Image 1: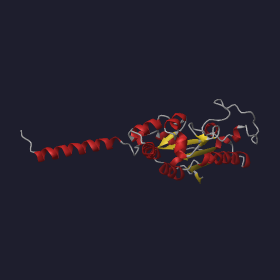
Image 2: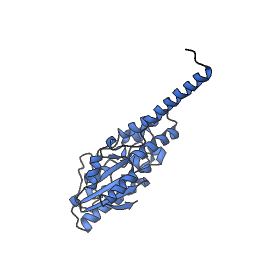
Image 3: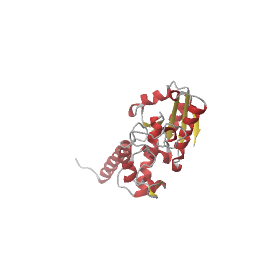
Image 4: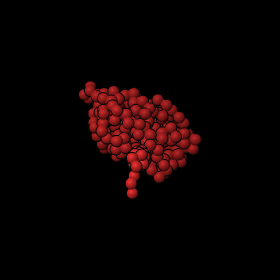
Length: 233
């Protein structure tokens, strides 16, 4: 069978279009119900806690939002006598704050501290580790004091690890991760495809972090279905 030049070009263009469609189809910008741990999210919306609060966090701002969460826990527990077991706080991290959900290897590999202007207080240089996760009390969280006013007590621990131990649930936004993968490619002229970076990031989320499809949608459900009060910092 003889194929004219015009037909050949048309067929080649069609194949190229299909190839392009296939590569785009591999990008998972939108999560479906079966793509994530939706039951873990339902546990949050169905929580029987007396006080439920969601912190909407987009800016890292030197981790000051962690101190806000700590203050809320202490105020509710000590100031209003709400038992610790009746408090559920959710930290909804998206925008730049989403990077706090990832471990040291991500911060080092993608130069997160340099990118987002986060300084490591121990070096005075751009952070090559996630300076917001580890507790000064060590992995075993052995605190020097039980006095809530003591800086070395669990009640003054502003670390992500310490707050998790007090029941705070951290959420990571899949949409933000997709956007950040593309920003990292442009920032550092990376050769990887966005989905490669997304998978790399999400394989290095901190323990206990729940990845949700869209943070703005998740906050809406926490408020409407879970009756969480809303705070933005």
